[in-house]
Image (cartoon, rainbow, N blue to C red; front, side, top):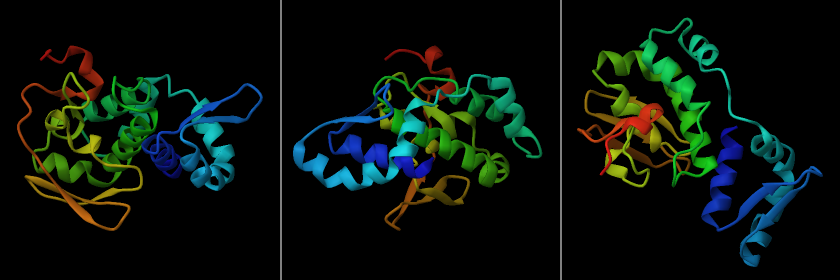
Length: 192
């Protein structure tokens, strides 16, 4: 799923939109040079792209929360919230590829780092925070910044280090976000 989300993100960055057709093909729209550049990648990933674009997001948050929480020592609210992400549509300004990346990053983070993050005092807003406008990067939590294929490699009380696909390491600094709320509750976020 992460490779498909990464490809969809690359296509969107290149100005290419991908739409599945009822006949089981993909319709691509965008600049001709970009279409030629990505033709082989899209052809090779066609079955996975069709599956990702046609697959509905999960529909049972209770079941997803139980799966996420079972055997892990994470706050139930994080498990429930992460499960609800899988049932939500992307917020305005967030592409489906970016949204799938957030869901993937959240699941991976909960498996690998939730216990340590909890012990270090990270909150749901620190991790999953989002303001009323997706493009307000200062009102977004750690997991909304992790691009497909990247991963958290270290976490402290105030920072998280993210290894990018390129191999570079980026540092996210935890900060106060009084106008943000966990992304699964963004409808309740105060307006600007």
